Picture (cartoon, rainbow, N blue to C red):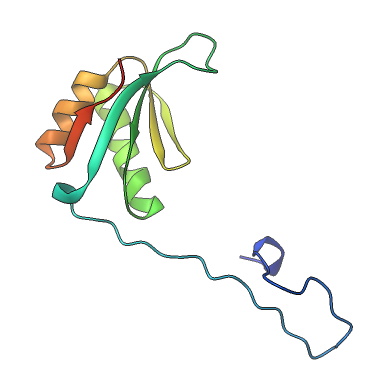
Length: 114
């Protein structure tokens, strides 16, 4: 990653030629085991032109593991989706199918919302 995309804490500009910027370190979170994850599955259609998506939230771990779980759920349902802001979005109403699969994988998952 270039220095341009890193967040700088403190001083933004210095005339001192030997000055080095202190970059904020990103926190790395380890992925919790499946049986310690508390996932919530809900249906959402806000800001989606009336289209329904099944959303999975509450995952604690690295973005790579979240992307892998999202990819597995998309393949399971045979539809598209995405992973945004720590949440897995699957196109369509697949809440029951996703819940059964996550429980089979050992996750603590439950339905949320209406």
